[in-house]
Length: 154
Length: 226
Image (tube, rainbow over the protein chains, first blue to last red):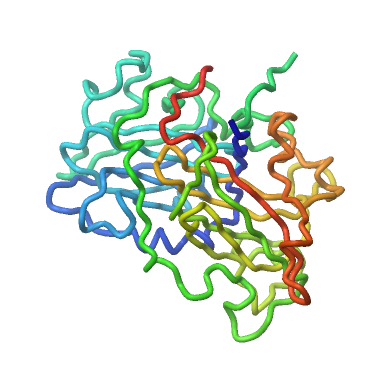
């Protein structure tokens, strides 16, 4: 067995280099999709203005780059992506300065779809909630603090 | 004694300050990969622009600095090649400055160097970039902190579970001894991040050659024990 190459942080300066795929995968919600909006927050609740969020769904024929949506958080830590209303598994990967390796999570539209291995008290961190706007759900990614999002060893 | 077994850094590494508020502190939850984690990842070659793998030829003129060629092979931990997979590269210029709005290091930008590129591995997992050796630069982590020269690599592999973001360092760099990001990696695995100088990879009269082989998880790897 060859020795695995270790992970290192993406750092604060990835924007220009990785933008091509942010642009290529940006799109409007499709007819069978809902939109998830939220912020990436640190342990003190402070938004990350320099995080990269990569969302993976099963590939469809209209995709630019498989099932990937790559999003750079905005100045307020905000992100937005679209997922199939009946999605079974939506993988979400967070990369940022201060993260020495990817933080891998999943988002669900209902608590009963969260993997059984997740402790019951933390299930809510993986569930996007409907908002007053039809087709829009809210979900924050918390890298620490009382409601730290569940991250997976995959 | 601190546990330093394994390959990857822990999320929290106190010498790298921002890990303390950004690194998750709850235990990771182990789950088996779902079918999507192991679905093939195909990146169309149409995503590549003509000089994406040669960062010295993306402008109307030549960038300043020492030209280098960085090449190697991407394999998985079972030794199998990782073919047709996307590698993204980004870096600062020879003076230690990124073309990025929040980089306020007092060093000049190079109008002929953007500092990023991408390529696909070939059928045998091989890749090659031509670029400029990046400079060292100061950062605010601690007093008199300087990052060693490094290239940022982002790899997609052939399946989602192989995704990796890392940094490549240069052999003999005296700043490695002081860099908390490099030292966040367990000692036994750290040197895998240092490229090897190879005269045989040097383009005679053009660019010094470095080899940086990269090993990703096996396609069917099970989650690591925690």
